[in-house]
Length: 499
Image (cartoon, rainbow, N blue to C red):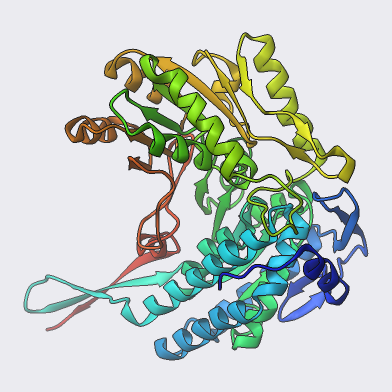
């Protein structure tokens, strides 16, 4: 799918692009019951973009009722596994066929380079749907051991109606992480995408219907978190909320589940992932991993390597190498430029937040090595250059709080014991990495690091066969892999007695 096009190509293609902003409920586009809408301002240039339905309680009620009716009718969950597999595989192929339109919608919404949207996000979305489609006819029930006069069938059954609330940094990818296993397991879904990134979710729902997914199995309600996400999480007829987003909102979701029907909750939350570099490491490899791990997607990645722990003896050399990689290999440009590797931040308010954390870090004593400044302001968009702060301590706000921007906090250490204490001294536990040529140390350190994913001498490598999720306040439950199916199911025992 890897393709490159000129900026003129993408700008000309915009004239043919339809920005559908209505809800998708029970197989149809629908305006908000209130008739209200809101405008999505484009991160790349600050101009008004799509007009979206502003969903509320009534719209959530309609979508949940549609999802419940589809589930109870059995129109999807009782279909033959091979037929369900065929439909989901067709859905994946339609996503691939629609790749260019989906990529443009994603870039207009979130400001990332359109070629990243095309060659990474769309591809991984389709791959995710295909991965779970392929699992459908490979899910077995069990027979439990009993005496000769009984038979105990242990069945894995779908939960019912799943409420999915997804973020704006990788909308298509994370939507696939939720939709793939939830729908493959036989559930119906109501998706509330982030208000900043609704366009691809609506398009994915239309493609699912075209592929043959029955109406009501996959519904989309757009709108703000407080107005649409909260009612979904509080809804008495939703059996589970699968949420990816901030730790702060994740805590609210848990509360809403407790206040309503004790619905299941799965949370993939924030991170401040440590990347630990020892003095014996390959510094060139480490520098590349640090720069790409922190700055890709403009730092708007939950497991971004924004906390560099580096042995003091090689700190200066490593920072110099990171600067070289950043300035030579990671191009910040307008998202339609073919050489752009990173683009705009999601919105002006978020850019101001990141700039505020940078200013706070400098006031607290952090020293700017390079970058971390607002740039390209003449475009009207929201751009911050990748940057590094050094000589930091682990108690500084810039080193402890998730910044969700292209800013690296470098903290020196002297011993392995100190490095481990620093690495684990965080409320988060999403990911981490260790760079060293000593494999005994690498495995010792990776085992002791409190994180859901740990890389050795690399960063951000994965595929759908590996589960993704965190420890501590990075949440619980796993996306990706065969294990993701489990959270959308429950076990039912059917006991039959003879004689």
